[in-house]
Length: 270
Image (cartoon, rainbow, N blue to C red; front, side):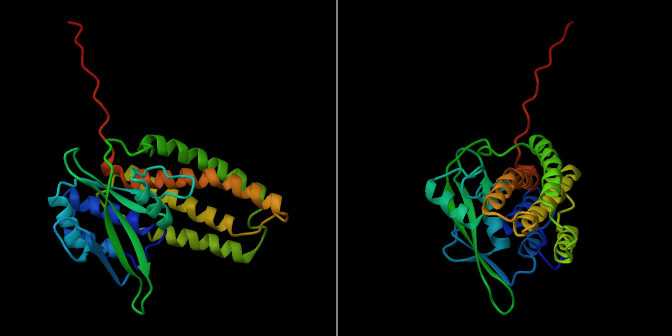
């Protein structure tokens, strides 16, 4: 059964993780859909190839697989940082407004799609609609780092974040901040990962989600900043750390979609 919360992961990350588990044959489509929907009341997908109306997530994954989709990757764009988005501009703008999207991986002769979420509250929980939009094709993930690159950048970001947060005097003995940081750890402990995800990617997901949670606390806490200039300087310090964490989360959740490295030619000296 899925955990009772989405924890620290965006919906697009969960759909990518569990959709890839299904597409790789590691789990059933029913199980993938159950975990991708999580605690939300309902997920429906509009614009699925071969379907004229909205359909459940499980049926959408099956139709995408039949249409030639081999993997999914997640992008988490922010204004000024469209890394991972393939275009066209209208789709990029909508994905940036949503803050997340799922991009399909297919062959060059097959259409390529983005899945963009919108949500609305209900008494039973959030109701989410995914709109399927056609996007441009590229054999590379549009600037997103590889797993190895993301791991190195995340390690650097973690070191920089430690120094930056110390200099900001974030907690300063405040119980409310300490409680929010404990909440980040609790959310991270509830992250819902498919067992088929490689251990290396699992570690990166957890590390990136933890850093994003801590940075969110830092961004919304006054700390030692008291002037507008100090607040602006702190935001400028946090921006590259947040970008590194988002890019690492994208790479780790999309590990199945990462192209195989080219094999070196073998030469015999004999």
